[in-house]
Image (cartoon, rainbow, N blue to C red; front, side):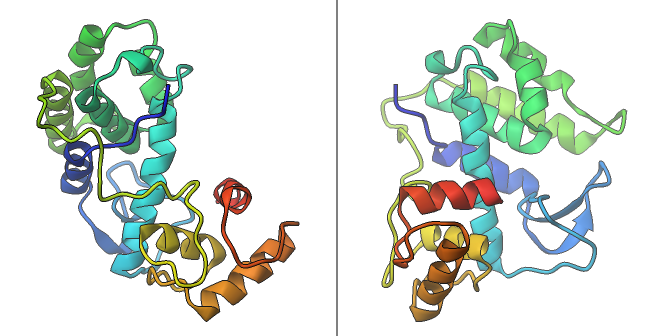
Length: 223
């Protein structure tokens, strides 16, 4: 069965509750955060551009889509409809893979929905923002999927495996540029090609400046 991708409803929910900040800040749990809730490698004083924030968001969503698609974390993953999948990606994005596994282990879909609101604390304290977010995720999880609902997010790209090279544009390029340390403007120009070749050489890959499956795999593992 093909892995699911997040839909527009889930993406909108994540953006709404994460917000976007281009300067590093400490979240309610005391973790340095930037962009749309991005935490990996973030430090005090760090700033990014909107393009980098968008790239980090796509990168982070891909990671949590992977957890929700994994039966080790969500045993009923193959039974999820699009809204249930989206709600769990948002939940995992906010609370991490460990809490996702705890939420879903040994539970039916109905039990997962009933348990979601319990995850509303940070540092042991109930937070109004987390209570509202859990309620929104629960509502989305319980919302029937209509025939008119898009199956998945048609604006996002399968950047994990999408082959890109000089002349390519879009989110896939932004994510790749983040990986290699280039300016994340979404345009695969000569500079990105040159940095790609250098990066490929350092990682034992074919130095051709073309980002295919092997380069993506190595790049995402290196994050």
